[in-house]
Length: 217
Length: 217
Image (cartoon, rainbow over all chains, first blue to last red; front, top):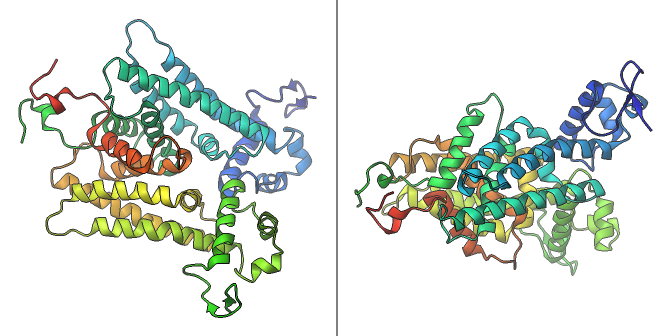
């Protein structure tokens, strides 16, 4: 089964990049899911929000679960690409450099896709679509833990904190962005990425030795 | 209107520390709210979960919002106490020491009250009870940002990252615990608290100067 575009002309794929109207429906759905919770949101709520009839919405999407799947893919596709890139060992880069790069890239993805990443981070696994998303999150978490372990092994990171714990906490800090970051607010993406890498890699404690070697108290 | 205890004897306060049966109802409610979302959970769902009739539940609690309020208070009372203690400047302690202490204490509170803190961190402000909880969270956030600023002012913390950003990220890292920490799992509370303070204050990068002053490459 295919849906048709706004002009009722060309057939349109169900998944993948949504068309213009579908994109507007998806944005409104994600916003509602984040405000009310996915389970508490009905297609009727969505229709009211958009000022459309339910049949008009069903013309574009098969239902709530399709919208959830598209939203989670939007977040997961970018994060997966960033992590896959960072996981690929290659000439002239260290694991430490790739870890720093994926932290920065994750900040950019979270800011650019904040609504869908917010939804992703709240997924509880109540449906097939949610379980599939959790599976993809696990793949990401496993790659990040490996990358941390590689950076420890090459001697760039301290070895006294378990790598799994490091990656959980490091990306816990990154993910916290979706809860409080406001685009157009006091801090731009680069400032936040700088702050996270400064805290995580160099620490908050003022370190005289960083700038003035040989001075200890 | 008051409810009565299990023996139908003494009148019992509506809020405050719940009685035995109320505590069991509250635990089940928090679990359901976290699994299904607060808005999607009905008192009927809760009755089914507990194998009770709805009137039996209403004997103990006035409704869903009372349960939410008690749950959020459970999380907020402990966190507020920890932050109030840390905010109190006093002879012989530095802001830096009190900040490190409140990070550790927050980890303990999150582990001990994981279900209610999880609920707290997902509150969206859809009702009076939720708005009141968000107001209390803001008070906590403001005190923590002040404490970070004090620690920068006394020269213990680096001053090149805005204090508000530091406290957001530091406690974003702490709060991420509720998403992945499993009691009885691989890491006990002290290990997690050690990991967080190590990462946040000293940084992940291996630092030769920490143990071997004078060695630079």
